[in-house]
Amino acid sequence: MSLLGISGYVLRKRVLGYLDQTRLLKNDGKIYEFADEIVLSELKRLREYRSSLLHKSVKAYRQTGLTCGASSLMMALHYYGLSDLDQKTENSIHQASKSSIVEGNHFSGLVKIAAALGLETVILHSEPEMFKVVPSESVNLISCPAL
Image (cartoon, rainbow, N blue to C red; front, side, top):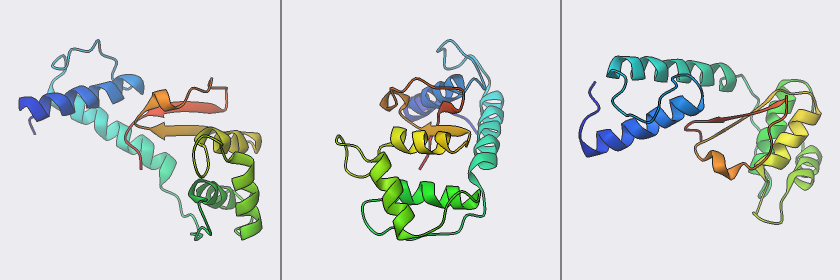
């Protein structure tokens, strides 16, 4: 695989930015500092790391309103035996994490709930500047492509 041309340049710059931010492949912004094989190898490491965090057998729950964040956290909490899967819990998490700035749940509110329950919390997002929280020992920010 070769990452050349304008679209390759943009893609490579973004990929190296992710790898630099995650400390997997520190670089000084020179996009051709590393051979394609090294960049692709580090992307594979990033994918494996994300898979170790994200691929779990989580029981599905259908949200009942604008509560996708609360419902997602509730499913994770249920996976670890920390909550029930029901509308009462969904609403409780929703109320505790909702924001006056955005509709639905704010990521930092959800992180606060998870961390308070003792979970090691990692925020995966493509735009780290959206999270202006000061990371604590139980909250890590990793910038990478995420759904």
